[in-house]
Length: 381
Image 1 (spheres, helix red, strand yellow):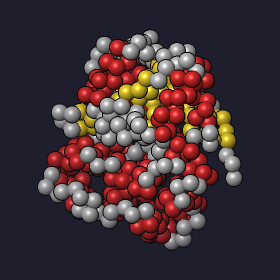
Image 2: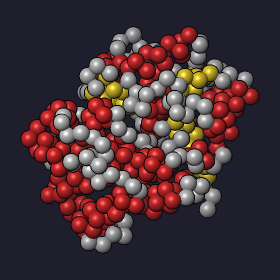
Image 3: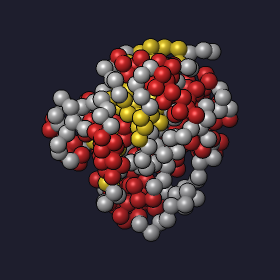
């Protein structure tokens, strides 16, 4: 089945195979004359990136690229990106790639208009109101994975290179003006990245659905997002050329990012410090700790998860849903625990202290304390 769509929620989204050809038009629609394409090192020389630069170049927009981006981007990458933007006289950003390229690209576009340090815009209270909006550059987002949903998000995750703490930098203007969601760009993803990013989308939906906060719209989006992952992630994993599956996974990723306005939880609160300290893949880390967090939260979410299981066609209520997650992880080659993932257990106390301070912790259905979070980390080994 061929899927093509133009959406205006939560921003302008051009969904469908081959839509990358509209990249230059999207840039021009936002007033760009000299965009800077920002991506990670791994994507810099790949065919999909070079094709995108060719499209920009052919339209008279140049072919400037910045790719000094780590898997978990930090303020050093950010400062280098801002310098490249200013030195090149650019007037917009094409944020290109998975979570790292998208997050850094969005943050560069935001920070080129600021005089304060990036940490002054952490997602705390109304800190975002400190920003000057006049100099924020327009953004076109082009996801090349189906996981983070950062292309429709109003924040970027930036790691503090000194403290190894991941910070969520937020402003409404982080939301890209146009998204090009072309599933053909995800066809070349290795299986392990398809699995990790897909499980990231599932984690976003699961945690948003489980969050105790009131947001019925996000609740519904999260539930349908989980259904799309259940139906299409195994297909995308086993056959990377399955465009229908790839398209639906791009939709699920965007839905997860929209849904987690309702909140995240312990999966992300654990995953963020693990990724910051050990530089692990974010989505795969989420997948590793997911069953342990489900057990941790069982008393608060058992009935809710039973309703989700029924919608997803899973029998057995909470236990059936838990068994499904275990089976899905096994099918996708996800390590059983943090030990199998290659993460040492020598820094549990430090990780637990970081986890309870993570913004995601506040959305967990059961309050995270140093004591129960330390035990949760032990269970993950």
